[in-house]
Length: 241
Image 1 (cartoon, rainbow, N blue to C red):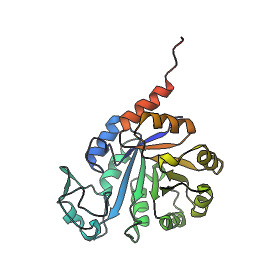
Image 2: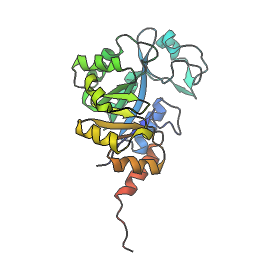
Image 3: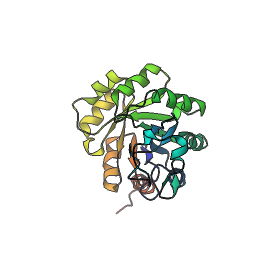
Image 4: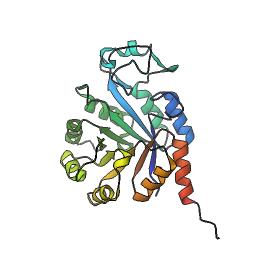
């Protein structure tokens, strides 16, 4: 079975990242998963945005966490609004999609973000179609303690010795390593431990083929169409010579 193709921040290779335009374009391109980033506004509303600061992506400045939802709704990312998380969940509830929600709480601690996200997933009927991931591994323990059944992914950006053993202590269901650290050693250990591997960020067909051959479960990509084409080519029969 081919890996799930997660559109990284939506179809971000072409469209403004983490916007409803990028998410709808990912669906239209055939992606069966969407990855995005979740933070909280000053008044506690969950929004979809990657950076802690507003400067790179909007005409604003300063920390997202210092702005209210009403204030953020006046800003744009290349002509598109910053989405409320509920907007994406509503879209996902109407499509056969798997979500990967990354909690952006490793730099700024958003108290209660785990419970808030889980409650919203339950409300939209998406608990069994979502992976919640984060670089904040204490947050992963918080999610495990909620015992809500949602899948969780341990994000990390360096090579690790037996990361599946560490993952077991956190109670997660998947490893989310950077693509260049995925090899036979990692895949064998994760498989034996019953862990999935969803890896980022995979944009080149050669890398798609390598990772698919290793048996990873998910590919997080800026270009879902390109990744789907590379996977489809693996299924094509080889013509007789």
